[in-house]
Length: 325
Image 1 (tube, rainbow, N blue to C red):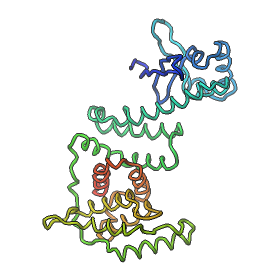
Image 2: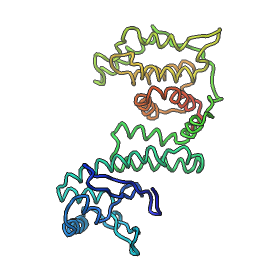
Image 3: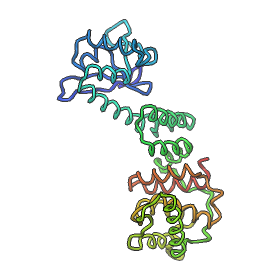
Image 4: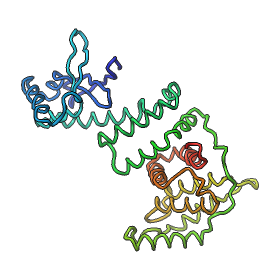
């Protein structure tokens, strides 16, 4: 449900004892003092005292954490307080309900940003690329500010922000309009299994010397890598199944990360072989992916649903082709 102040969502307390109409807007959730009385099951005087102390003691700034909103059947606007204030009051009254609400609100906020307007394909189609880029920036800023992501998640957000234009490619994919990039290069060199193994050993030795790998790093499981490299060179009817450097590189990165051919180090080795393959085909310097972008892209692949394989492959190929710059 939406009103002029933003969206309204319903929160039901554990056991279904109370229902609260929670306002969602300005990247957070909002409750009135009366709603906090009901949520925390404390007297109005208790909630009012704690609210005054939150601001009086300088824990939070009242101006930036409170806003006036009009409510139904009232001519006067009421004061509403954001999630930071709600959490502070909850700690002061030592209410278990406060913890439950915080967990719920954090989940709803994250879900809204990830699945709602921020990356809603219909709105992107209506609003265009400029608004989409603003939405991605909002997503990144809000998740980081509310500490809803780990350090690895921040790396993912970095690649989302850096390649914001690439998400327009995802929109076309969702609408069955995403084509393979036109700027593709025919493969000239395959990765030789024997030489690849030596390269991985050299990488392992270097990482061991720096204390950044264990003895399990790069230990191949039952010739899994050999199978992956063989798949990249498959042909059908005399034609290569993967007919470009971009397509082979994308599948190489994806398969090494998702199929786990090594006991340890699959993401690092996948990224290493990806770069090695591009270098041997004279495409490394032309690729549209830098070091930080590759790290985050590897994390995106690792966390992706296997059903998203085609989506990830096409995304990698378009990034390589430079269409997302």
